[in-house]
Length: 188
Image (cartoon, rainbow, N blue to C red; front, top):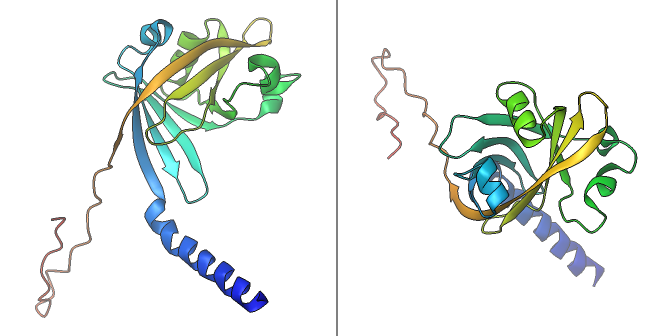
């Protein structure tokens, strides 16, 4: 009995290990704005670049779809939000528990100020990011003058689609070698 259970667990781990490389890598999800406030902020919706692994999905970048602005995101710390953390700002029952800090590089400062006027530092609290599921994002900012952190906006999005990244360029054989007779590596 114990041997059978051990074999089943071992087989499951092997299956997970084999599925890992296929499930890992960057993916792109796009969302449409669904509420008036969301449409005002991101009229064409948003596009997320996600680093997806077997046991995690981490949002790396957010861009307004069809526009130029984008911002990098990094995992945030609830301790940076002040006393009570995320629960104090959005409530205990809110489902948006994955916190990212908006990087100030590139368009990050502009995004923070657009979402939270007067803020010098910004965060986004995401709900679960899954294929085919709608998304709610809570924008949080730290006021530049008072140092207080506050909930600025709640943005609602409908899942639009998942996009493939372009294929990588394959290495080519050394054509200077007179004995090299392999075919050229092509994508298709």
